[in-house]
Length: 308
Image 1 (spheres, rainbow, N blue to C red):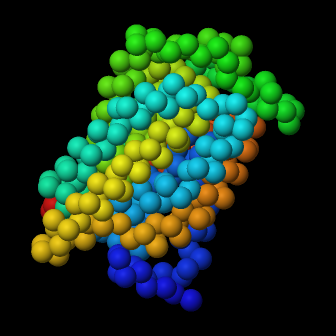
Image 2: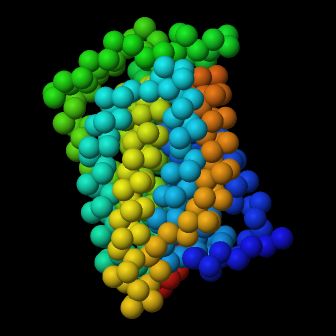
Image 3: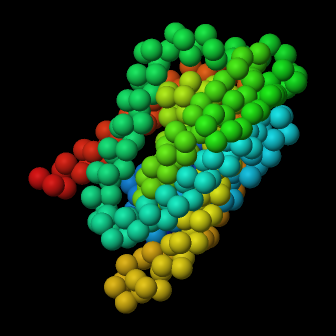
């Protein structure tokens, strides 16, 4: 039975959004990504939801889906609280700036798809480069667990400073620049505010590719940071909606549709976080590359056709 969602004008079977979210987030949550970067093109291309309101609706999905995955990583001792704080400090102001850019400069669906395609292509190519140069990182990456115990996968020895942040994971020391992490989070927050993904799909690959951090350790932190920025993003769009009421531009999120996606994502997030330590890091990144490049190619081809 198809349902009509008044906030977006979308009409779809009630089971389709949660099913799509379940499948997507079951895998992406292993990489510290909520899956919103794939839920968005599904909403635009399949459901025909192309107004600016699709961005905050996507963020509503994050709010409902992410807590289950974060809980699982926290339970297994793999939630990096200092890294979560750094990500939040940069992405929170960035997501507001990104929202302003989305409403003022990218309201047209074709232009928005072109922007989204460029972002996804860049992230995908960065991951391709990371895989091609992956000998050092592959050696540093944790091997798949051979038992069911999560004890050996706990993060230890976290040391936060204004210049450096470090922690121990799987008997290896990992360190990165605190200011560098903040600047990265700020830029990612702006992109996430425009794209409606909270930034996790971008910052997680960057932390792996540029900082050399293990995806098994940073996944919980990137999901937690994505949740916080998604909350700010949803509030921004909701408060901005009255200012655009006279223009006929849909800005406020479709809460019901976003929550329906989120219910499937909630189950998928927990499942992905539960199974993550059994999945090799290179396999996770390889599948993400294929997905990112496929979606980017579709968006860019749509944009080019609209411009011709």
